[in-house]
Image (tube, rainbow, N blue to C red; front, side, top):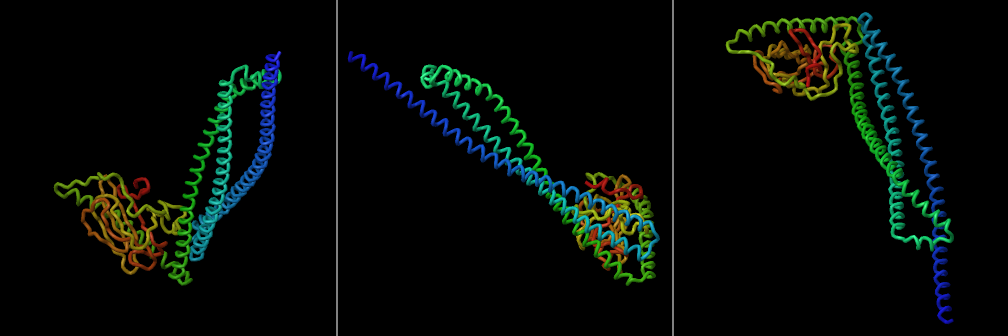
Length: 426
């Protein structure tokens, strides 16, 4: 009888322990549910704030794009006005109108780039937010997978009898087993989602890097536009200073500048043939163009006027047979390729000064607005050798008439005919 009572008491104690364990599990479940509920509320609030910020950013980006379109329309109007004035008869009023429009367009260029920078900054902020949100989702997926793996591991280490004793009824036991099986199947979906989020995150980071690069390019372009604006203003001041608001003086200066350019072009074309004939007669001398292309005669910089540039301010006087490369007054000039110096002309009293070099393969180069010359005619120079200093500052030796400010006028000629230097420069 005593033995039976002991067994009954042990059974009661065992059931009591099981009950307490079940109660503890239930309490944990309740606590977890409350915690999960609070976390859901927090996540919902955070998501709401994030969505609002993203919406504001999208609106801001849209506004900036519309503003850029408006500025581009205004740019076109200035360009059309400049082209129309260039087609009219050369006069001081027309020239001043062209210069005024070029200044206004340069100011508009600055405003456009500044707006584009603002738009890019908004794009960067938007991408940052998307990356941040994506990172949170990735972390959630990682935690979920870790918890599921832990749950599966725990299930594998608990016997069926232990799971059965921890549940009140057989249906609860079956329900829990079914839940664990469902979770086990869902882990593959979670892993796939994790991989998808990782790929998306990598793509967003690549986009961000591209936007940051674009921003840096825009900032550099902004600095160039500001320099261009400064040059345009200096050109106008110089023209006004030269002609003293006199139409007659302006016409005289135009005629002088036109004759100066025509004389230089004729001289260069004539020398091309003479020097090549002279080289051909030199015993044992064969001029070959064997350099690896043309190098930039000055450090690669902003091109202020292109080959036959339709926006060249004096285009109605003559076509622009070169590119103008921005270079500070007195910048060292280097031979773009090896060859013989055909002509060095020092521009005294503000006249146009230049250096001409003959190369092989029918090519030659001309370096205009030189303020100082280091080489002599008939001298052989090698690629990269210093040959002089740049000029172009109004009123200085070698600058020429109606110069547009400090720069290098660089020509490439093929069989005596000007061609686009950018097709040859490395």
